[in-house]
Image 1 (cartoon, rainbow, N blue to C red):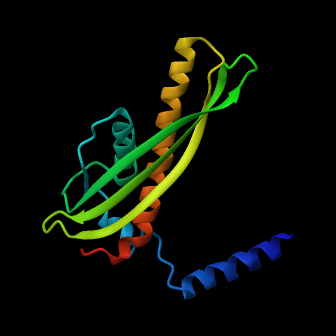
Image 2: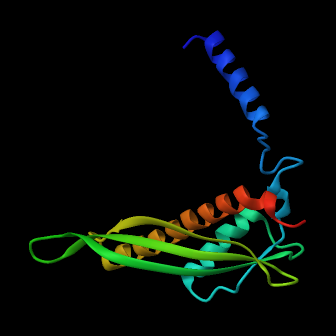
Image 3: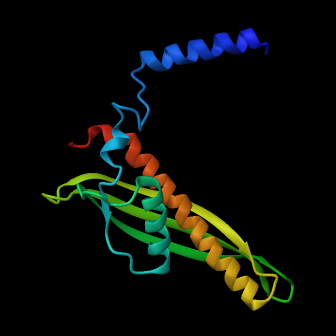
Length: 163
């Protein structure tokens, strides 16, 4: 594709986005500004909860003025994936889901609900310490992926939230 073809394509794409009402999530009229610093999460109870909340805080900013409350339920399951002829598991798969509900902080009315899911894995071929560290890392990575999915969905629906 030549540079003039690319330029024409970009101009057409920009015109199409402008015509469909596209607004950047964090732009002046974007719904994302309704969420930044305004989402209070339920208190974490597990290591996975803490990792999920940390990533949500990174994406939505530290709490300034609570306008919304995010309730969540985290579920994970680890399954052996690679088993040697001597019945030693050398690889594990970790799948997880989070059911979430965004509430109005003042009325506790349910504003948005959803469920996200993802998976990751880790190797169990090293020492016990290395395997434990790999498992912990897999949990952190999974919670980060799930938190990113939650934020993406909240941003996509943020325009419908009360100000």
